[in-house]
Length: 583
Image (cartoon, rainbow, N blue to C red):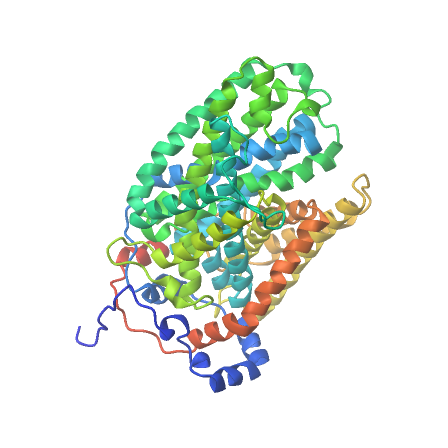
């Protein structure tokens, strides 16, 4: 006990808390680090973390423990709160009207299958590596530091932009409840168009949900139960009332724009499934991760998929797809069947849904940022956990202050395509990481098998990209699929037949490996290819900005972190954490 470091004050603000590595001690050291950029980049690309490092060593960076207080019941409701928000109310009408028609139901089925395959992958990792980092930590273990950085950048981008968009939408739905114009509560200024409608209500709702999330994870869970329960009542009403006013003739034509319209819509409505990964980030606060996480993730997502399909069906049967209002689909549909008052109930449901999304998002996003800061990809000050609340206050402030700035100044709509492409990319990388985890173990797998696995994975990815590209260039063709589909099938079959699984999950694992994760890869890549060119242009610009940040800061900070001596323990890492990961 004598050599244990005494805990420091949580509220501190020093250079060491933001730039602790040797590369940032002075300008001379920084210039020297920059001169080694290429060498360090090779080191980071080739580096892999270990399970024990993620579970034990990195958690020392936070100095205090997050409090174990969540059960599978809490996680299930967090799943509802994280996922069911504005997406289902906004995107269903928009995509049914513009792309899918009544076949929007099939779009939700396709996106739901993709999301469920990703959920399987997340669940296996979360049980064996129960840390707050979620997909960032899992990809860092199996695909390396650089791939994890790409993941981290997309996580933070999605967290900030997504929260800002939902907060702006919250204001619009709130004005609907008051029967006023959507911009009536925003401050009109003489700033340039797009930045001239200031939204203090969006900032206020971000602040309120952040304060609740910071105060206590358990208190947040109670609040989430109540809000999600109210939202489920409203959703049940929408489904029952919609089906009660159904007209089967509205389902004809079922797919007016063919298969292409269905999959274009599926790629967009995937945004409505976003947020399920927040459950995986709560592993450090879960009482029994090996049991609670599979029940919470799989249970909530199964029910949510059914709910989405029923809501889409009720809208499609209530109103002809050509008459659906893309901006207020459910409200207008109920008004036209003589239930004008129902628009207020729909607005209340959307408002409750967005509140729980912001609340659960504050929890999950902060825990992502906490673990990203633990490896120094962002300053380690953001990794600190408060000793009394057991929550990462600094990380919560990082995401929410940035979101508040965007939500206050910019007329930011739901950037569904950009956020979807980020989510689909991470889900695809998670599926690849799971295949690597099962078939490659450092020090055990022969080099020959590693080369075979690498080759087969490349064939799976390339054939998936080829399928997606051919679909985009020639949606009515079939010849290209006779090449890409067999290549995907044969590569997956080769992994199944020719390679032994060098790691077997001891508690819970994805079934039908390698087929399920390989199918997840092809579906996620296919849905990405269904998005428009503008989504990829915006994504490319964001990626370039991320890489510039990495070259000048993240690369050198993580290199210093990886090559420093291990820290002595400043907080007790509970034995059941390691036990649940190695059980």
